[in-house]
Every structure is written in C-alpha cells, then in structure tokens.
Length: 375
Image (spheres, rainbow, N blue to C red):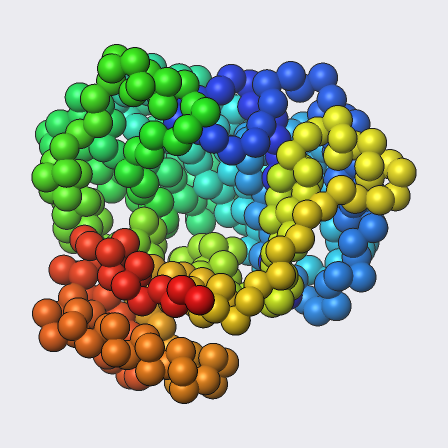
C-alpha cells in the first residue's frame, strides 16, 4: 500500500482560486473527525500491507485541534500497520502555525509540514484571499524549523494577474533563503465555479500572457536548481532526495486509499471517490455504509495514466514496464508517436526510460496528449 490520503474539508475562509471541496462552517468538525475514525475502521481490510505515507490535505488540516489529531492518529495506528519510516505530512496555513500549535504538531507522529504560502508579496496574498501576511509565512517556516521539523515544503503560485518577472524573482529569492527542503510551484489556473473565474469572465482580471508564463517557469527552474533543488516533477523541487513520498506514489501508479468527503482511492483496477458532502458523509458512515462512486479503468485508461504520470517526473516512463504491463500494441504506439519528439530533442530515452528534456518540459502537455491512446 503506497499511502493514505485524508481530506480535511474545512477552511476558515475561501481562497479565490481554489476549487477543492471544502466548507467554512467548522461547527461540524467534531462530528466529522468521529465519522472519519469510523470510516478508518470500516475500511481497515482494504489495507493488508504496511503503509508508507499518510497525508492530511484539504481544505486546511491545520484547523484540527490537538484532540482531533490524537483521535485520528490513534485510530490509524490501531487499524493499519504504519511503517516506522512512513512519511506523515500535514498541510498548514501560516497563520495557524503559532508557536503553541507547532509545539502540538511536534509532539504528534507528523514528520513533514507542507505550508501553503503561495506568495511572499502582501498585495498578492490579499488578491488571493489568503489569511496570512508575508511575515507570518516567514515566521511560520522558521518556527517549524526551531521546533525540530527538518522536512518542510512550501507551495507557491505564479502567473498571477499583474505579477511581473521581478515580483516572481523576489518570491523565489525569499523561498530559497528559508533553507527549506521542498517547493511546489503551480501556475495559477482559472477553475470554473471559483471567484477567480468569475472575475475573469467579468473582465476584472487578465491572465498573464504565454511568453511571460514561459519566462516565469524558466526562472523557477533556473533559480531553484541553482540553489540546490532537484527538479523531480514538473511542479515539484526537492533538496537532498526529500521528494514527497506520497505524491511520488501517485506518479508511480501505486495503490492508495482516500478517506473523508471527496477523497479518491485507487486499487490498481478501479478509482473510487467519497461523496463531496460533509453532512451526507457523516450520516452514511454512522450507518455503516460509505457513499462512494467507482470507475473501472480500462487498459487504455491505465496506459494513458501511466504515460501522463510518468512523463511528469524526472524518472520518466519505464519502457520495459510499459511493454510488460500493456503489451506490444501500446508499446509500439508510444514509441511511434514519441519518435518525432525524440528527433527534436524534446524527449530522450535514457536507461530504457522515456524522459522529457529541459526543452520538452515547456510543451509537456502537447507531448503527453500525442502519446495518449484513444479507443
């Protein structure tokens, strides 16, 4: 079993860009945690081997209290076999990370903190509806380090309206100064049903142009690699081999289970997901029957995911594994469609793996789509 993902669907406020399932009414948080522990008990037989990672995402997991965390981890350790070297991550907002709360986290099984900073510019944070300031973000990182956390990741967003190359460079410099181990950097996406998308439709914001986006991505790669980070996935950079074990398991098509509302699971053959409603989730779990939907993955869908996730990483697509799992038909299709990109030095084959080159990363979406198999 690769890992366990737990979706904590509570946020104090909504960010303008976020389309993940969450609620700002925290009145049900106690009932939710009780239901979550019940779901863990209901699904214990889905995991027969040792768990390599536990990831508390959201939403905002740092809205959980000491008692909530104790209740969750006690249940996890009772029902599952958690590996002694498991990576156990909690996503957190900087303004939740007071010295007192960090002390609580340091006394828990957590050994990795992922901090949603997004920007070190106060004007950008205000635009994104983030609750923290730049100084709070910096203090949160330093306080976590002082409390003994030595595996810290931060999230950054680029490509914001009115964001210049100078502003983005300033953000990256501040990130590098913090002596953290991991950075995830994502280009701003205008997701439907978000406030940001509504602003776009009304003409109140304008996306950055494609050339600027490309320059920002290039600056990201150059500055982080110069500062000792390894670019191991399109949006992710790590020092000293401290890749996110949990997310890497997704990219390597390993099995995992997702707990709580809207969380997804993968058993190697099927994808399933819990209902995206706290009230219905609590009611269903209390009755002993979890509300889920399931999709059976055809061989073509598995192949497409194998290509998509593999090419996102520095390890690429293992061609021997591709042939072994999917057979000559899919292998030949992949090689045939990849050849023109190999000729253009946008793809390369190294150690029998198909890998994006530095130039290929910039047009990775187009390359991946060319390698997708359509029935």
